[in-house]
Image 1 (cartoon, helix red, strand yellow):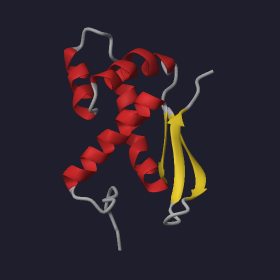
Image 2: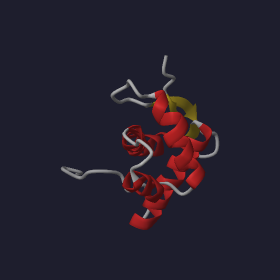
Image 3: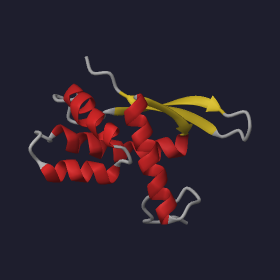
Image 4: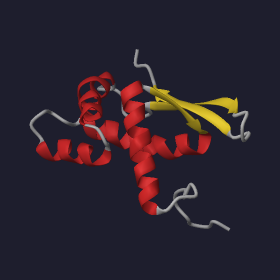
Length: 122
């Protein structure tokens, strides 16, 4: 039983899981949408939500916020896009920046696929 066990292991050790999360987050920010398994999409969602919230509060002069975002993503271009394009888009939104949509099963291993993308702000 999984009583009081937080988070998913995804069949990986800790460092591999952190690298996977950083890679998925960087790809989602670069391309605005990502097709992956439903478990990985659900694992990524809270991580991205926290990054966007942190980037929204970035004013340009705060070195520590920029350093934090650099530590959570692999590429500097992804940090630039997050701070300059994505965060201002959700200036008036309090949360729920991403959505996960199920796409069906993958033909090779019958795994459930999902598309995670940013919600379009009206």
